[in-house]
Image (cartoon, rainbow, N blue to C red; front, top):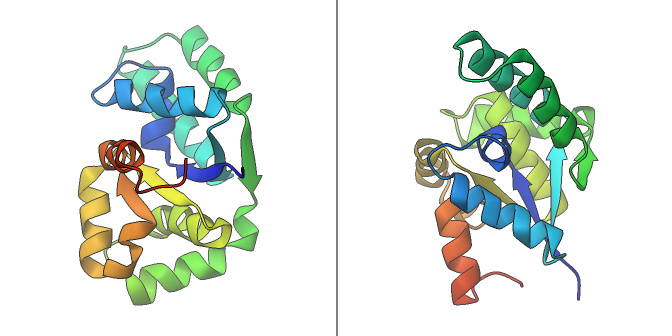
Length: 160
């Protein structure tokens, strides 16, 4: 059976390693990956965004420089297929300009990755997910908040 692919954004991946609101749900997704039930795919942008989150957390005194380095090494080691941004940036710009005007090109890179990989974009940013589904209802199947993704899996609404 082919694994269902998930495109996690930085708001999800950072929660694999730093306890925050929705970290339990993020760790549940990581557990599904480790059991081989789902696969991860992400744009290269993910690494820049998670690196920036770690920089910000270090600057705010939430983590040390050593912890930031250890976490980015773990993120780089995740079993995640990488999609070069150059392959999807044109579609991301189109998404931001024509389909979901309130989404930045950064956000649209994740949507474009999900569309190109026939995957589900999972975010811990509920506000972003609502904006996307409101502005382009066809994306409801491709862009979901993390808890909704887990609920759909539990209900059998997603491939297991």
